Image (cartoon, rainbow, N blue to C red; front, side):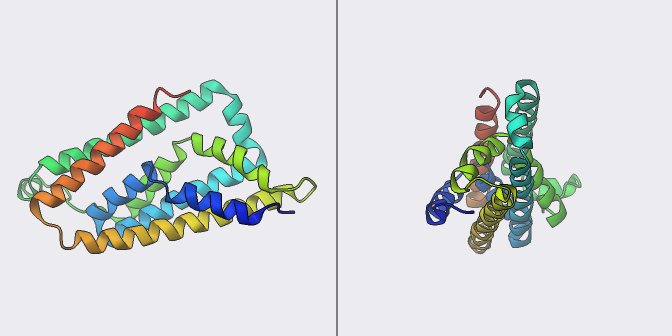
Length: 206
C-alpha cells in the first residue's frame, strides 16, 4: 500500500521545517496572543492541511488545479488575506500600546481568532493542494486502497506539521515573554513585512 515511507518522512520534514507563510503567521499570532494564540494558529493551519489532504485524496484538488479561473480566484483571495494580516502587524508595530487601549483596540489575539486565521490562511493557498497532488501519489501503490493510503499519508503529514508548529509556538511564546518595547515592535514589523511579501509573491503566480 505504501512505497518508500522513509523517504516520505524525510521529504515531509524538509517541507514542514522550511519557513513559509504558515510559520510567519504562527510567529505573528504567538507574539500577539501568547502560547495559546500560537497553538491555536497551529491547529487552524493543520485543519487546513487536513482539508487539502482529503481534497487531494478524493481527486478534488486535481480538478481545482486544472480549473485556472477557480485556482486564480482562490489564490488571489489567499494573497489578499496574507497582505491584510501583514498590514495589521505593521500597524500594531507602529502603534503604542497605550494609544491602542485608549482607542478601544484589542491588544491580544484570542485563540478562536487565531485558529480562524490559521485555517483561512492555509485554505487560501491552493498551491498546497497542488503540492499534495504531486507528492502523495509517489509514495502510494495503485489499487483499491489508494484513497485510504493517501488519506493516511496526509494525516501523518498533518500531525508532523502540528507537532512542529506547536513546538515553534511554545518557544516563541517563551522568548516573547522577555521581549519588551522596541524589540517586540521590531518583531511585529518583521513578521508583518514577511506576511505582506508572501501575499504579494503569491498573487501574480500562475
